[in-house]
Length: 254
Image 1 (cartoon, rainbow, N blue to C red):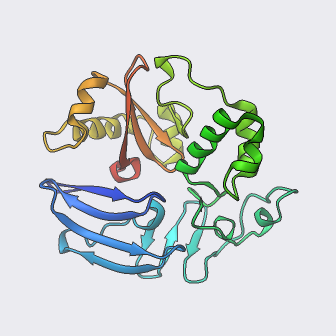
Image 2 (cartoon, rainbow, N blue to C red):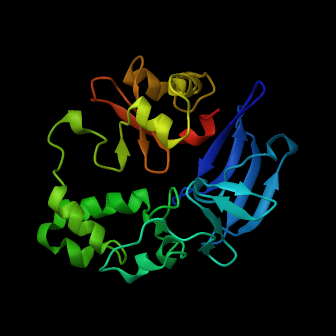
């Protein structure tokens, strides 16, 4: 997050919650704690970052209403429900998806809802499911964690284990979106992603960046891949080298 000439860095837990912000000197300037539903349990912020909009699961938080903005609709954490009905009618074989107001299938520990349209497993749980498929083959359905069985079935049909270095880093929920797709997804004007990408690369190569050494390995003008909730992966142009960050593209948007 940029404020004037100052740069602040977001830190996340496994669910994608913003749990801290640090400045360029690695000083902690904010810390946050939430319960499973996103209710704020503890918040400590210095004046310089009191307008930080991103909190639980990386969502934008409205302090005045106590609600989160998930693009398609608002989420109210006190009661664990959305204010508007789900635009997706759900699956015929999954009654939980047919409740138009429930958040994350009433399972916020294992599920997230990146944009208010449809909940899904956390990125690292999808990775676990891939591992089970690759190792266990036919017994994947009985081995994956509760709540991931229907996703594991889809993964089992489509998963192909990596066979070369060119596949390094693929198959983990990241995608090389086109500039047009990113601009549409995040409401940017035509051509605006070019500047966003330049800002990301500039901060990654900054002498204070924790990813400076990794940037040297991917070479010049690398590709920016994104997870479904906006986390950034940096991939070399030849696809042979990559690294994941705990930064989110949302924090670089104008």
